[in-house]
Image (cartoon, rainbow, N blue to C red; front, side, top):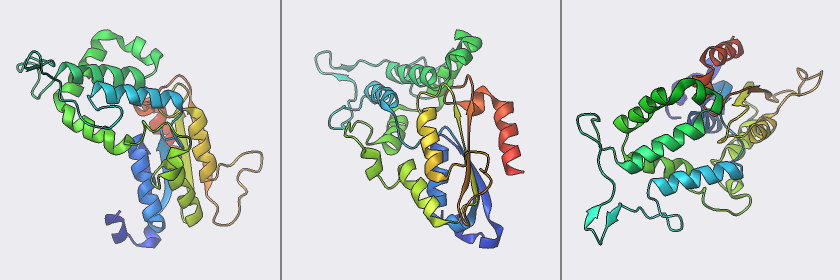
Length: 254
C-alpha cells in the first residue's frame, strides 16, 4: 500500500484480484481508499463456510501441521530412523517433491476446480498440473503460505473471522465506511467450494450490493456493488472460463 501513496488522489486506479489476490486488493483499498476507484474481486467471500473449513483442515493435515498446536511434523519416523516421505526423481523435478507435497497438490487441484472442468481435462492433463505444483513449490513454502493466509481456520468458534480486522468481512465494512471506493463487483463460481456463492453474496452486501429495479439509484458516496455467479465453475473461475471472465472484467473496467 506504500506505493499507492505515490498515486495522486485525482488519478485513482482500478484493482482486480482473484482468491488471495482479492483479499490483498481489499487490504489495499482499506488502507488507501483514496487511491482506489473500483474493485473487481473473484473468488472472495465474507468468511469461510463449514465445507471450506473442512477442506482447509485437510490441507493443514497433509502438509504436516499439527491440528491442535500448529506445530510442524517433519515426517521423521523415529522407529525406522528415517523420513517416511520419499523425494521424487531429481531428473523429473527440479526441487524437493515429497509424497506429502504431491498429495497436497492433488487435493488442492481437485478442490479448486469444478468437477465438469476436471472431467473435461482428463487425468493426464491434471497430472501435469500436479507436477507443476511440485516443481515450483516446496512443503515449507506452501505451509508458510497456508498458515499466513488461513492461520485461524482451525478455530471452530462462531464468528472467529469477524474478530480478525483483515478478514474480508471486516475489510468490506471499512471500505464501505470510507466512502471513497466508487464501484465494485464480486464474481464467484456456482460450484466454488472455497468461497461459496452464499458467502460471496454476503460480501457484496457488506460492500453495498445494488438490487431491484432502482439499483442504479444510490446515496451519495455509497459504493455501487454488483454480484455475478459464473455457472459450472469452481473456485478457479479465471482459469475455467478464461474468455468469459476476461470479457466481464474488461466490461466492468470500461
